[in-house]
Image (cartoon, rainbow, N blue to C red; front, side, top):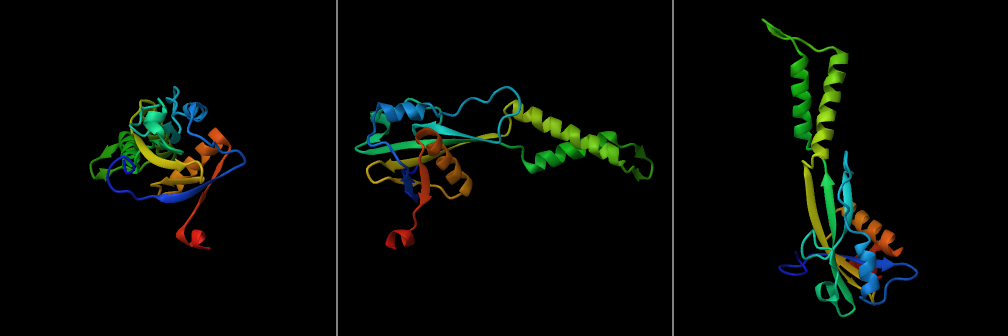
Length: 189
């Protein structure tokens, strides 16, 4: 994790809103705890789920000043859980379902009717849903961030728009705040 060890590469973000937190205290930690990643409910999980964690590891939700506080700054992380079946696996399930519906002839493989192809597609989609419900093809990623409360600056190694949107959505849900990207050009202006 870049902030705790190793090289640092980050995006500069500005935290904006009416009443941002002013101190790294128990009230701030309580709001972070309210927005931990919840375990997926029974059935098909959401493709992308996010929540806060302390940044020590993805399961740590025990926010304390000793773990996350640095003067007037908060060092925490956003946990992103992604549940998505890879395209190659989907394609393989569909091909296997189609092969199960084909009849073999002496001179080659019989073509499938439109209805049989639709049934094969539905069977493959159902198999993908079962795999996701069992927890297969789930990846967990942690994105650390350093939020300097007095200046309203947040530093995070965010390169994708989806990660930016998730962090922005979490801050909006927890604190009614929004994020704005700050480039070197916008700061110089």
